[in-house]
Length: 153
Image 1 (cartoon, helix red, strand yellow):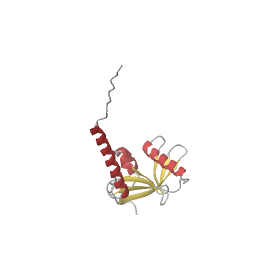
Image 2 (image 1 turned 180 degrees about the vertical axis):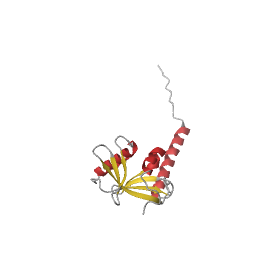
Image 3 (image 1 turned 120 degrees about the horizontal axis):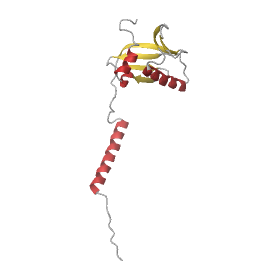
Image 4 (image 1 turned 135 degrees about the horizontal axis):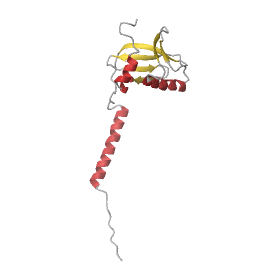
């Protein structure tokens, strides 16, 4: 009644390769963390070329009024049921403000950068949205809120 027992061993080369890969990943991550190797910058530094402080006001009929924060002048009115991307971005920023217990009064800053990027920033929460990441159509929805270059003081 002897039974033949076979022992299958894991291939030694595959085990050494996996251990080397894990070790390299740990050493690399540690080197970046302690500053031996610089981490890559995703967005290079840029200079603002045009900026506008805006306040957004919800109207009872569902429209959104956009005001220049400097003097309260009307920039635009988004009719009810339109401009879904703008409304979605504003809802996200409003939710963040509510979390930080900030009201609607502080303005948002819309900035055009010299590298072509466009961002919407809430200085009260530190949140900044890079709008070009959402494609040219959505970028245009916000870029039309910037004045022509000769318009601002």
